Image 1 (cartoon, rainbow, N blue to C red):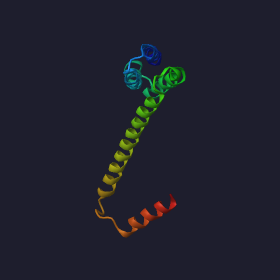
Image 2 (cartoon, rainbow, N blue to C red):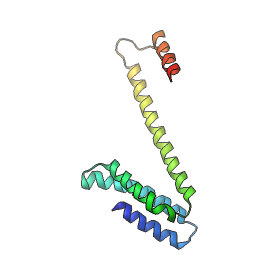
Image 3 (cartoon, one colour):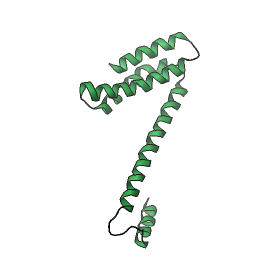
Length: 124
């Protein structure tokens, strides 16, 4: 339902030919992702990730020819992906650092830890 409403809004903004249509369409796609996740998790009590994926597939398949600036939509979602990846790896690094430095038997890193670091780096 959220994907269908998004498609209607994209189709309506594609016909208006204003200079702000690209911004409107970008905001609509971002709102669709958040709204479909929220509605699925809160009211329907199903997987929000699957709801976002389904809405995204609908918008990508049916709405892609009607976007005013395909490049702008791609840049917005590439930036969103970059922020998500940065946040995930930052949190993973902080959790790993906390686990390493909160060991009860040793607070400092030893030569064995440095050896493991180079072994993992070499393996990758």
